[in-house]
Length: 173
Image 1 (cartoon, one colour):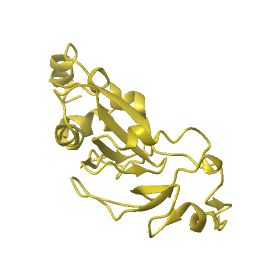
Image 2 (cartoon, one colour; image 1 turned 90 degrees about the vertical axis):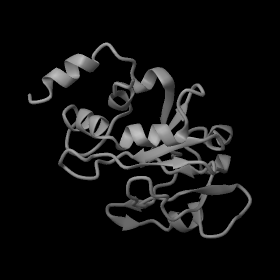
Image 3 (cartoon, helix red, strand yellow; image 1 turned 120 degrees about the horizontal axis):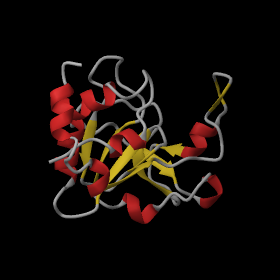
Image 4 (cartoon, one colour; image 1 turned 90 degrees about the horizontal axis):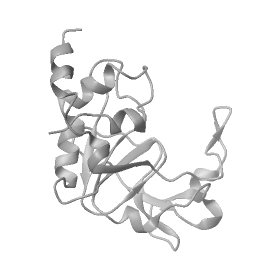
């Protein structure tokens, strides 16, 4: 309620979805855990060293802070491991990457970093690609880490996941 004037002011501005393409990370057709126990598939799908059919990316269970690149590994993009198309051409492009699960139950839900290297990520992360030169990966990460974006998400989402629809609706100038 304290920010009603802010949201009214921003209601006619463009949104993050107007300027970006937003999507979840790669999804595998093999579960990593089942009933809370490891299945052994993690060793197949995530490698510490380069291998054919694997690209650098953010593995499951990675954590990072604002503007901080997490520890990377090599994730399978082999067709036989994918539940849906892994889009390797898209992943090589600059983008911002953020958490899909809320970092906290408070106002600071998001943590994003600019990906200048062109890495992929697991489905528990979200990638935000700029559609034009007006926004680059650094500006997108700054927008996603901002108090406005975090409060926008916190006031509209539940306590756990951040949805692509809400991210697309974040007002931007």
